[in-house]
Length: 271
Image (cartoon, rainbow, N blue to C red):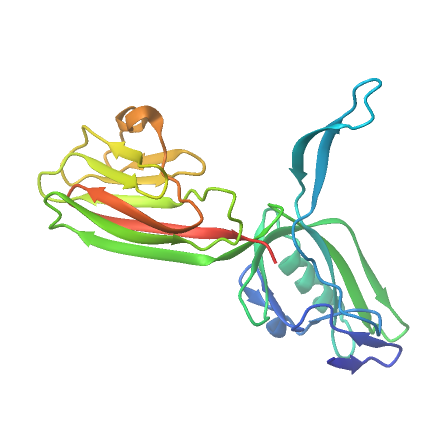
């Protein structure tokens, strides 16, 4: 296990790698690294935090089980640096780590896992008479899971006179939930409609009709947000108000209409 020596204590890394990025800024550029004040095993989050939902009925010994309630991931980091922590160091690191909304935290491990998180609680700074020490900060994530990198697939279907089947993959390792990607399409030539049929999701239809020629429409299927470059609100043009989703694994999707299509996904990951 990698470690380094401060003049008052041996510290050991808490993640596999001692460096990370937060809000797009590397810990290396900030002159700090992840550590653990201990010489034992490395502790890491594993799986997904959750609690069971039950209720009891009088005179019935076995409680009724209703499922699970997931909780956002929380984790603490300890950061240290070689030498003295100057006032400027502390101010710059506070500016870096204490954001007002969720930012990407990425540990430089073997695979890219992204935690969307924000600092919470009361952080602590521990130092000695020489201003050598470490800071302890707790973070809370936006979900009970981590995230994959962003995957973008683009399809030029401008010659699609009838229909064409494309293949898109739900790369999450959570096989019991749907993924709702972001979709943007631009109609080509005289096309005024757009339709996706997910053959792996029971033929579920995602369709817009009555659009303008060469119109561009963006849809966030998770938040149900729709934006058109015409400035018109297009929810009424969405058939049955049914948004697009992907099942676990490979999804074969039939596309109707001449268009340029972009599918953007960031998948939930449990490690």
